[in-house]
Length: 60
Image (cartoon, rainbow, N blue to C red; front, side, top):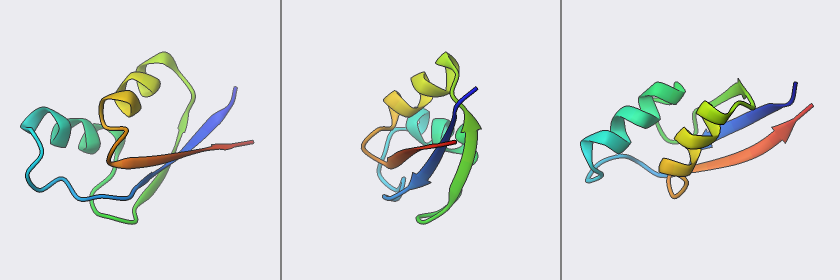
């Protein structure tokens, strides 16, 4: 299964509580942090909710 590298590019200060919780749920804590997650519909939904705060790359 494909993997996604998710990198936080903007901070969460001033964003709604739900978006902050989503960024933490992905596993990101500060600008520049990156995590690798499986490409599942759940993860895609989380990314879509905070797309303006993160950058996504496909990793093989």
